[in-house]
Length: 330
Image 1 (tube, helix red, strand yellow):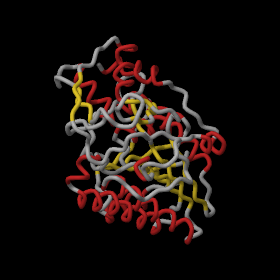
Image 2 (cartoon, helix red, strand yellow):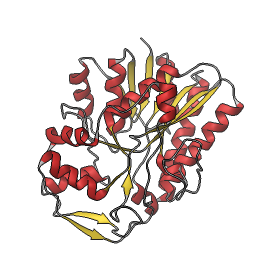
Image 3 (cartoon, one colour):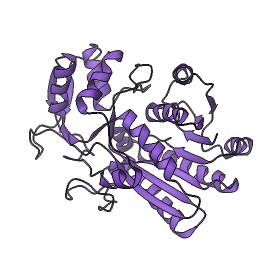
Image 4 (cartoon, one colour):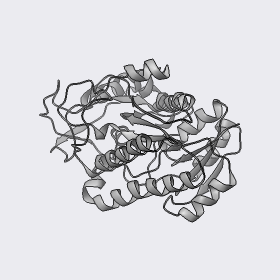
């Protein structure tokens, strides 16, 4: 059974990846500092997988402790999900994002090299793409003119990894560009549950349904989109997790660099998401329009043809199914 290290494995996306790793016959080892995740996720993973989940509470920047884990276990590959991810916070605290996201990745790469582990899957983002180019976004599209420090940190890491794979033939690097993960495991045991005030659309809507927030604030109503609100590509988190298994199966020991879009391939506006909640959960979402949010792009959705062709992967869940799966947590 191959050991797979999952940084940020107790987080929203990482924990769902852990489920799929166990299901596919791998042995996940979680490395997380639990700054924005919860300890009870480990027990929930044990319940769902019926297996003991190995985890370590450390910060990736602590290379001494990180190195000890690499020496203790033979590692086939690392899935690197750890990192700060709130766009609005990154605008207020760019140094924090550069220091954590880029610095921790460098520390991880250093430990991997020291221990002869050269297989890496990196959780990147649609935020690396330039705004205003032809949609749907393709992997060979323009990147780098980022709109916020979060996206910049992901872009810089991508450039580091691309150079690493191109100039050091020992490395096999796969980059997954996430679009907008939503929903949760069908049991509802795992969910998007940040410690801080939620920033992503779906948990904010859930807070409105639970009357923790009076109304949904929609940032902007005059974008050049079909209804004036921002359009995004929403993907069920379980589809996203399964994409990592397919990337892992394709990873090679020899020099390799692959980049894949992981999205549904369809764009939905904020107002369409609100309507989907009413349709599938019979929940009416009161909302109000406020000013545009700095760092937001009007429209973003991807082409998934490359992942379909090379990974034999495609999404299984529709938007309606993703919304319906939220019933367990509302």
